[in-house]
Image 1: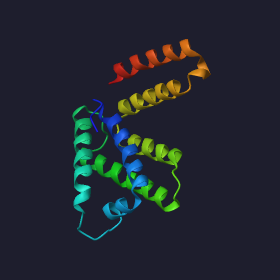
Image 2: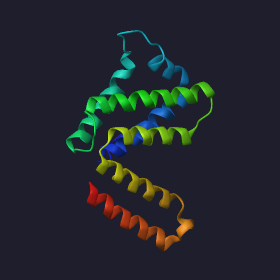
Image 3: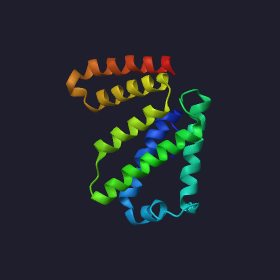
Image 4: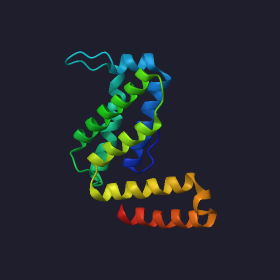
Length: 154
């Protein structure tokens, strides 16, 4: 996955890709994350964990985290694994749960400024997904105005 330039958005996209991978490959996912032994981390976990640590390090460089970057990466990873396993166990995708836990995890690791930016981005995405609610012109204006606020808060 290529970086969007926004590490918080990259965490969000990586979360969704992680869940999608687990649901599409439950057997392999269980081999990667379900075979727990003290002091042992399967090699298959190395690359995704390294990528996540890089993303949280970029977020820290941008002063967007409320916690150290390694702690942020751990927080995201453990919650992402838990949500994915729950969906695998129930054999039912639950995007509402996944999105809620993802946003809660992001809120827990980010600064107030980053949370505000995330909320504005989420509002833009919601407006874009439902243009019929406000109407085409109003939706375009809302997205434009919220985009300015996101840019200003970054």
